Length: 468
Image (cartoon, rainbow, N blue to C red; front, side):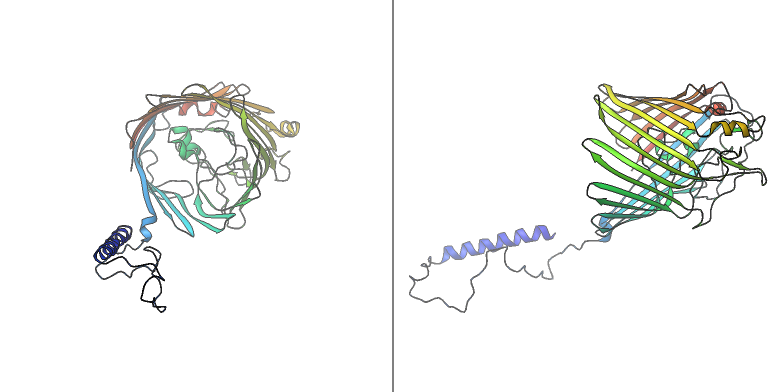
């Protein structure tokens, strides 16, 4: 209203001056007039340069409200999935949920606040008890953060947040932030592969470098496959766990003692982006076992790595390396603890033809001190290869003015002789409505291999989502 009143007031005042000038004779220039100018009168300033008029009681003045900076959005979704084979020990339904996500963002001069909450009705586990760590129950708090900018070169983000870094496409080496593998394998939206962290993130921008440091006061593990929704190979029983009861795990949940720290230093050289990484914490899934207590554990872990990404041959190439340092003493000779590993990744992505993009990656896991590992392996337990090779292929086709998306992503391990095929079809009906369907297919010759163990979980799914 203020932006409307001021021009109208100025125009009206100008019209008055014009009318006064027309009604009187034009005055002579100063010095030619018989009347001497009054030195006590100050010359008037042009309209718009003087002091603003005080609003009268009849003038409306807009007062900025704190609510003007608040934005609320979200979506409502129905999603259903089921196994493609009949597995008697489990329900054939893998997904049966209604989900409402409400995303509220407030931006101010001194801070930004974000709150993203999912309200879920899950007919598979059907457990209403809320567990924010495992993302279970009728409510899942995805984000609750405050972003502070104390200096121009420093950002501080505090609270529950989704964190990610690295260059891999669905392969994570230096990204040691929690993942939700149950969501990934049963056909939830890809955003749910990333689980939230309760952390403090500081980002420093200085002389062309960016330094990101993340401190998590209490360990946030992966939302790993634990047997309740999906089957998996249990080395302790030498077969696939066929009972829908959770695996027994010793949690690391002591504040200040079971903490995690992650660091990334990144920059750019010409058109290439580089980064160095460091992590101190624990294996994100229960990779160890305590034979005395009889429970799975999260062994200690340090990770050091680097990555490079940039344009090559008409596309984008990337490479990443990481050393997984098993910090537990005796890990190299203890069959119940994971050995240290080297992990390598190279990849290339480009547009093959208009609206068709391809991405290929080659990944290797190399077990350190492999001879010691074999020498201490208990009888009956399957031995993994010294080098695990994995090749991935992604093809994405856009059709019908990019309203239809066809996606294929295949993991294939020539060393393990297993793989995982992800198929997706998405149709954007309108700006707010979207329909999606797909399949998750696991295959392999050995039930103890990484993907082969999930063969009984192959499934199809469909979803309808409306955004607001």
